[in-house]
Length: 267
Length: 278
Ligand SMILES: Nc1ncnc2c1ncn2[C@@H]1O[C@H](COP(=O)(O)OP(=O)(O)O)[C@@H](O)[C@H]1O
Ligand SMILES: [Mg+2]
Image (cartoon, rainbow over all chains, first blue to last red; front, side, top):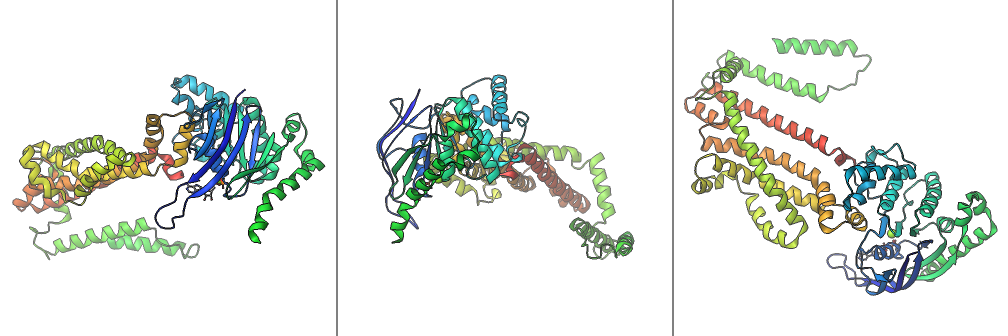
């Protein structure tokens, strides 16, 4: 069991220089968060509330201005294969076919070609793309690309999956299917997950916990145990879950929380 | 005559099918072919009626014969193939040299501030300079032999290869780099596995442009200082007023340039089919 910990993490972007430059901007303020490897923590918040910044800190792309981020007690000092990122715009490599994209982390580790292709083949099957290994990236649909992106992250055998709105660009039908897929693949992998989304419904369906990030500066203002994902994994239908009174109540509650700041601004 | 009958045939064809597709415009390729036909036709007429002295403007027929003689007998101690071979040897020697120097230099400019600081002024000095301006200096330094020509051609190719490499490197997607880093890539691996491959389309375009520039420089350098090569052949022919060989040589130079460009585009499409899908 691994644990990813944010302790009093703050992030301030330096003042932008040049035309249209702005002053220093405090984007995250005093973030405390723990994610264990049997969890999927969903983070919701409005655009610009600092969700991507939070994830980039966990990934090690950014360094906190204050506070510490640790994995099992070891401070995060940069990106690493123990925290694999899945991007909203897939970030697959167009010069590699689907199979070699998935095999990419294995190549970085020095795994021989035949062995890493064989492993990639297994992962392709696991994400339901057994026949698509030879395909070019641009021949894949949005949903298929995200599956490849997730398989590529899994190939790194990470302790945590960091997912930045991976389903945000998909159409509604594909998105529903991918939510189910994501839930199952995460459960099988044994990795912990941080999922950023701005769909309250998605956060509730997929998250073991849902945390709300409020903007200016970004603070975690609410946290609820969802637990619907366990029901779905145990065979409950998504439609039934969504129709349940408790789901509706939580949905309404979260909607209120997220939009709370807005009225203040308007007033 | 042939041109007129061609036009007639064309007119007849469009008339036959006119009702079905009246508004269909002439394809550009046909218009271009017609233009070339008209130019050759006017050229043939001008020389047939001796409007211009054959010394200045030999007939198309004479040029074709000169071309044939160039292939089988040659001119100034070498056949056409030998002249072309000498020229191609120089341009490909220079290409290899400029790739070996230009790609690492472009990587240095694109990835490191120090590299950029050192190399930028050199490239910016070299880029706008006409190669013939430094040819005399190169000849003083390395002599009149092959080395001087290859050096000049390579120098004329370098800027576009360096600049296209550094532009390609700088245009690498941030997400692509971050993805690799979060999947466990070291700095060197990011460079080799992500930065370099994403710069390949831009590098290939740079090489194609460099080939064009190199070909121009090559012919110019051979006009000035060479004892073989297609440029030298034209220059020698011009000294004896053998105009048909001059024109034949110009046509060969143009054809080789077109073939080089075409092959370079073909290689680009083969090697980086993904460049057009990004
Ligand atoms: N590199 C940066 N420099 C300065 N400000 C930034 C930078 N990246 C993001 N921001 C600002 O930080 C805030 C949060 O951005 P982000 O983390 O992308 O939010 P979200 O993902 O929730 O939309 C935004 O107001 C954005 O303009
Ligand atoms: Mg974002």
